[in-house]
Length: 219
Ligand SMILES: N[C@@H](CCC(=O)N[C@@H](CS)C(=O)NCC(=O)O)C(=O)O
Image 1 (cartoon, protein in one colour):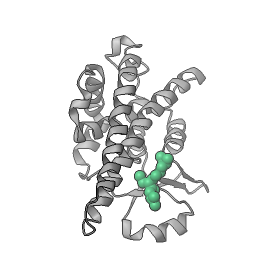
Image 2: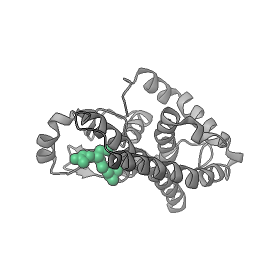
Image 3: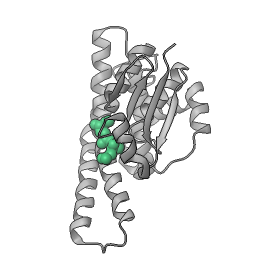
Image 4: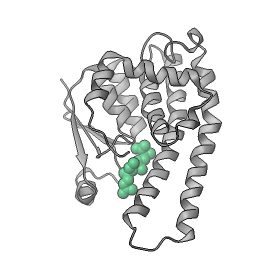
């Protein structure tokens, strides 16, 4: 059996979708949480300028969260049954990723500014942060209506994105939407089907116990 190691910082961020896929598939993995202070050392070891990175004992080392997630979903049978289903899973994931990417950029800027609190706040920094927040909110307002509609293609949106099976895109939905719920829940007003999907996924037995036992993290 393949041994998997997932490297990321100590947060949910861009890696949580991959962790949830392992949980859903009941596959063991080593969850390495890199401290920021150790990052330069890890960067050399992994020869990747960014995290997450997935490593296997079969010789694979790969960066890019969505490429990793798609690889795992294919390995675990969570990507759809044919090309058409896989392409639907992919475009739904990519829509959520556009939101998550804006969110992470905003989060890191906020974090960096807090970390550098000793240097005085300048209007440039505040402009940058409010620009990133505005990009994030605009992206949510542009993409969420499409996702709410897309969910309703199967069973009036009362199950999952492709009907009755939980797939990569549903896990990606949860991993993205939980950041919105934490940071700015009103952005989800008007999307009852997406909200209900989140509850359905968090109630899904394996996911439910993972979420219950998960150590809370800042991002
Ligand atoms: N598109 C990449 C983006 C990866 C990325 O920007 N990761 C950030 C953490 S969320 C990182 O590694 N930052 C470290 C650095 O910039 O030195 C992905 O989705 O994996």
